[in-house]
Image (cartoon, rainbow, N blue to C red):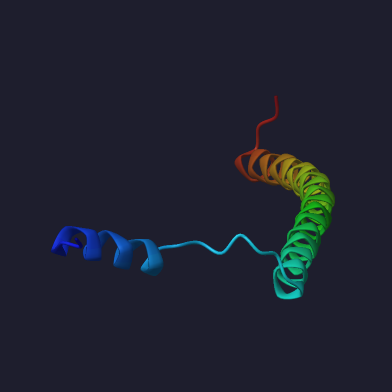
Length: 88
């Protein structure tokens, strides 16, 4: 004798059953996912290397700018001292 609960259980089993088969579409999708992740990882590494080089260049440029500013500061101090008529 089949009751309403038994029918519901059988229907749930059919509706939510997972197919354990493995086909070519799964294989292609998995390979595509792995290749995409590998490509993104290599792109990230390349961007990181580029940014590291840019940071080093910016630090060098900053040092040059600070050196030039120090020279300008010294020249301005000399001009001010000459204008005011006294020297250190």
